[in-house]
Image 1: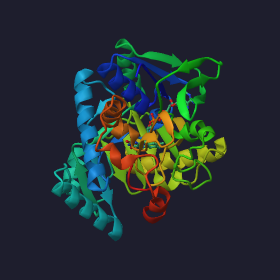
Image 2: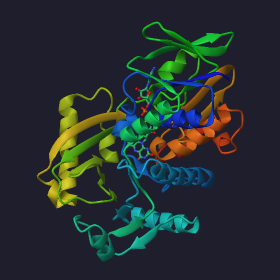
Image 3: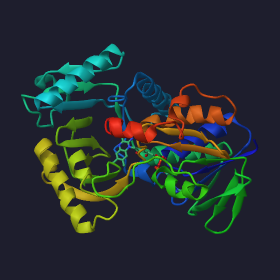
Length: 386
Ligand SMILES: Cc1cc2nc3c(=O)[nH]c(=O)nc-3n(C[C@H](O)[C@H](O)[C@H](O)COP(=O)(O)OP(=O)(O)OC[C@H]3O[C@@H](n4cnc5c(N)ncnc54)[C@H](O)[C@@H]3O)c2cc1C
């Protein structure tokens, strides 16, 4: 193998370029249509966790990735994009309380930091939150968040310092094939770049890149409305004091981002947006998220909305990563996943090893053409694996 082309410099492509550049003397070319980290990774909630991950193999993979982030943060001199601040979650309905307690018990038995705490302990941890006294509350001290955009940029910078080539501002228009082997890429400016292997890390845009090869990537479409792939993420500013941790309340997910800013998202609002949503519709939903934030964090009542992002999760039909080569398409490797902020460093390490010839027993579970993925999706749904 002499040249690998990676399409897409989100957190997945960036982490892979970093790993390949560190481990291999060949040529690594990373191509990004926009700027590194400016896709889904930029607007992601970025919660670093293995909290709801099942079965055990997927949980272990996520825990391994959390350990990798700790190692990376040390290597990068404890950067501000890595925040292992812990996660506080609570539930109020009988069913949600039961689920939370069961989850904490399971995680505890699996050796993961998880405990049920009292409301007064929660208020000690987060004095600037309105935490209901009657809630069931759990604390997950080893979780946190990663800001996907600066993290991807840091990884790309390290990869290029180790010899990887970065091409930005131009799209890969198509994958070039010869005798059913992928032999390179053709860019929107007509330039062709030959490669022994092309790795598709194009996130939610991967299906459109792969479709001309006859590959129907099993991911959830971003439309129609109600699709779990679409999401609305809102940033508010001027929240002082603000919570320090990741917060999962029944009506809102919140995490800090910068000094006086909070990132807001809510599952029941996500289902009301898709790629066709107009600005008025999005602004109305953003206002609702801010209203909920104000109920939770008193200082958010007077906050200003500074960013409203409509984003798309690269969400495989069964919720699990799509990682590996595809039958009948030599020269192509796919790396598309939800929970990509959490998984990126471990995923990239395993993918790099596979590209260099060592099959990963972990990635075996996640082949893009695994049997029954659509049937599994119908049985299990796709929630829970964020
Ligand atoms: C609202 C929301 C909340 C989330 N919450 C979490 C969470 O809490 N924890 C977690 O771990 N994960 C979470 N995720 C998922 C996570 O953000 C994604 O799995 C991850 O960002 C995917 O990274 P990526 O590099 O594959 O995709 P992207 O970041 O989208 O990167 C793909 C890149 O490829 C480029 N590209 C695409 N097509 C081409 C082309 N033809 N040519 C050149 N370049 C191309 C794009 O411009 C983009 O930069 C969330 C996602 C969303 C939307």
